[in-house]
Image 1: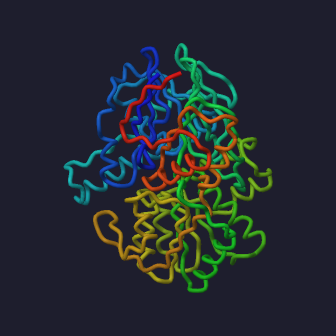
Image 2: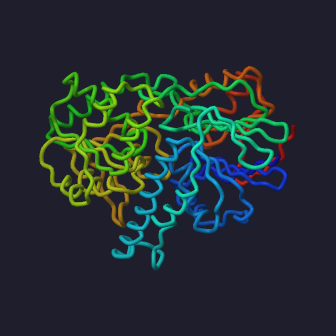
Image 3: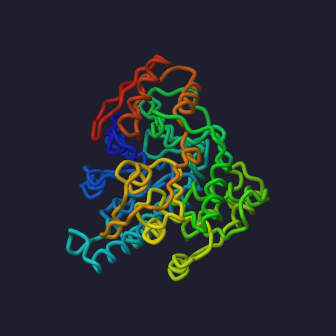
Length: 453
């Protein structure tokens, strides 16, 4: 069996791992590259394998850096099955449709205002392409062994992180491969801890936070401090947030703060139709998370839902304190950009940036202290108070990754550290080698390795 690292190797986005076995090809994850332009350009490259030869795709979870390239493959001819948990399938329906629609809107906006270097600017894929891709989704139950191609079986286990996220075990050629996907926190207030795995011949483990630990500060206290401080100035707290996972965790904490009267009775807006739809799935898949029925209801109703473009635009005219949660989490697109253009130049306001920000994104520039960021072809000054919250991440930190790895009863024959920036991946590699004594390496983009039984 051969594995090729077609993404999230040496970087934290674009997860794609191609398995070849007895003439069959299976892709584990199908993600978009995000962040730096040189990475995003990979999204426009040829896949590297005739799509008639690709037999199956398996998704670890629905975030776009793991699922967002799927409409490109389908538009270009892929017609095979796409396996994922039921919750991931439902979230993918929300995320991929929104991604296609957003890319069409951004291309149209660029063409109207003439700030793209391409004439005309084109979307990577459209909402219609996404709809075609969604027809290929095949829900798989956790712990169930499924044959995806002759001689190759998969088994999914809970990974925490977000609703539906799973690790993937692949059994073929007398070998067991495990893909960690994105691992969740051990003590996440919403999601269960990732399930332990006892053995694998080969392991791919993520390293998003492989070189750091999450703050042990109370996230609710930090959230309350920022909101209260901003409200006293008469300002608005803007939170760029991933629509799936981060938005729900934020609303859970805001619900608890509101219950305790730890923040003023100010309006909270969830300005993301996608996040709204995703939130309702937490009620549908209640067995997949820790929340009680009451907590789930509270989380779902703490915010005013903003659906239409007109309602979104009206938020930019607010003159009283409020909290606005808007996609996207790294400020790479979506409605949050329009709020940033209005709110970021005013020092009365706050920009609360939660979680990991990939290099090259506007979120990363903002928390690094940039005086301005470029949005829709013009520079927008950053004068608002900026607060980075690292304790709201849905990713395991370095110690939690090591804790999960220690659940293996025997070392894998070899471990590949993936899905991390260069320093994070290499730092985790050193820890695995020194503390566990395992054979471990960091693959490079497009490396291809023959796996031996």
